[in-house]
Image (cartoon, rainbow, N blue to C red):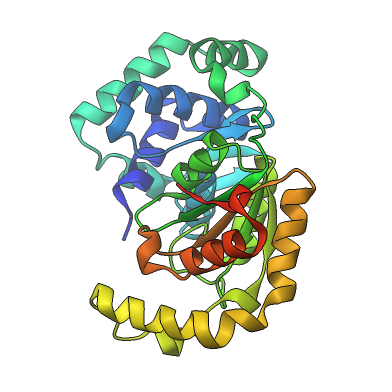
Amino acid sequence: MLFERQKQLLALVDALGGEIGEQDFQRLLLLLCGEEGATAPYEFVPGRCGGVSFTALADRRRLIEQNLLEDAAGIWKLTATGRTAAAKVSGKVRLAMDRLAREQNGRRGEALLHEVNRRHPDFFAAPQRGEPGLCTIGYEGSSLEGYLNRLLRAGVTLLCDVRRNPLSRKYGFSKGTLAKSCDEVGIRYEHLPELGIASEERRELKTQADYDAIFAVYEREHLPKQGAALARIRGWVAEGQRVALTCFEADPCECHRHCVAEALEREFGGCFAPRHL
């Protein structure tokens, strides 16, 4: 079963003639998504050669595995099966893709790069480093690109993963993929599993009182033993890093990262007062 965004990816390849180079496709997809705004199937982050969607690249891999696309030396080619799937997008979506193909009229390579830079210069700007300090962020309800853009807007330079087991069923948030994506946008990734809470201790959390109870135990019995980990975070900030503590929950009051942040502020002073992103 295909996601709607994957069908749209196939349809765009079809609208562009059935085959397209990877970098050109990313740039054309960015132009398309920029027109669609909040309803766009993909989000983008600044990359070394302009905007990039890691989710689109992951979808491409899945579509190749399903024999809907072929990758021939960096050229995306639609298969016959892929063309059938591409035809299932709505007429309105296909019209927008055909219009984009006509507007660009074969523009590729440096000419296309210039056009994307003209329309979306923010994707070519170097990330701005924030002042040294502490932030926290959860990825619940966020795409990988939306999450990374929040970090970049806040000037974060180092992401500190405080999950015990950094695995996720949601694309982009398992340790390997998240670390690689952070590196692509100029953010350093570090994992401190000793600051996490075991998954079996987090079951049956339904109310704020349930969360508060487990956090009280964490602060009383576990966190005081983690002086070395807290000192590492302090050291990163002292080096000039803007550090973001990360875990799953969107609301910091439902995540142990707020306990870590408060412990850092108590131990090392007001310069560690966290900003919750």
